[in-house]
Length: 118
Image (cartoon, one colour):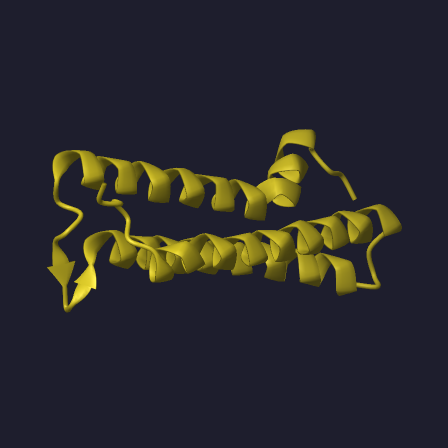
């Protein structure tokens, strides 16, 4: 089975790239909300920064689960070569780490205010 370098690299790093994009979005959104003064806006009683953090994490989580499922299918398929199974295992492992990182990214938004008052 052929493994083009770019496609294989994006597959292996897919979950971590999704986490990185979510991380950047969440922190840039929080910084802009604090700088522009709309961090106190609430939707359904939930601050907008917390709501956007949760929404972004759900979208990123769904994308990461898709990557993890792909890695799981590759890793469990006994009909393919060992190289492909290893790529599936590494994809599965890095996606699992990304899911844990996504959960850890959401926790501060649930506990701490986005803009500290001095």
